[in-house]
Length: 221
Image (cartoon, rainbow, N blue to C red; front, side, top):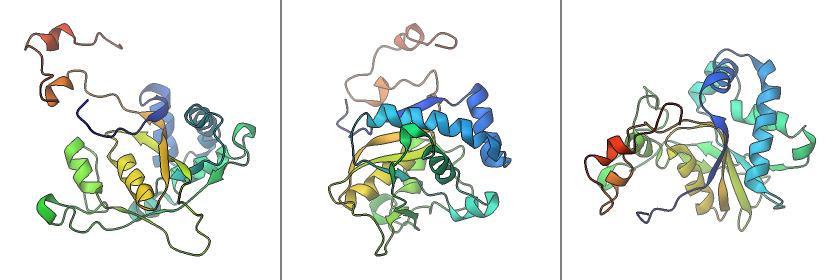
């Protein structure tokens, strides 16, 4: 509505309850036996996003070096490896072409912004702060074995969607390399704050002060 280009995202579920607990146990506590069930959910989400389109590249979002050293594995890459064993996704092309890079001159008016690997991570940051933090933080890997991206349809794959800043950065890097980003898939998506007034952020669409209470979502809506 405000002229921004939106990236369509399919999530296997909402980041709460059993799905949130399973994902946290898998990522933070090394419960790799959960990978099988999580991969099944990911396959269904990929199927919903890709449909019957052929030749689509599944592009995993790279984990940071600090996270990889802490966990000893990349959750998204491991889940995609398991997902490819499931018949519904057998033979799918996974293109591990993205890498983390320190952003340069990505702050306001060309001033250096915070690097993706800077202390503090993204937890607790709002949408604008996350966007500034990850802008310019992804690059395309080099090498002779890198798949050709020019003109190829791509779907970005990540574990959790919070504000969309990471997915947008991945899409930017792929687009710059000639890839046609069709959308993204995540295992779980967080819900926006119940009282967030999206219309108020768009000029001309702000409603009356009483509209917020009138349109306030009911419990578990």
